[in-house]
Length: 85
Image 1 (cartoon, helix red, strand yellow):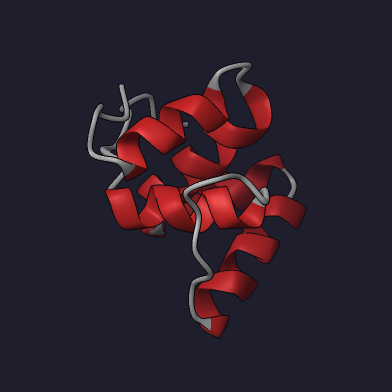
Image 2 (tube, helix red, strand yellow):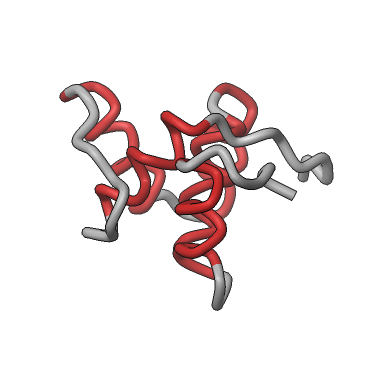
């Protein structure tokens, strides 16, 4: 498992906010929508494989889904007020 925390770009944060129906999000293209769906549906092993190719997207999806303040952090990133850390 990768222990480094990637930097989440504002665009990625906005895509994941859209996925969660949160303020500040915007709809990505169809490939990214399907990719986010695959990440959300993946088991642990496949999530780690996807993380090797799309580390920021997996980190952002994990942040939104598994951290109490994940949506707020992504909103701050989307507004360029904070880093992913």
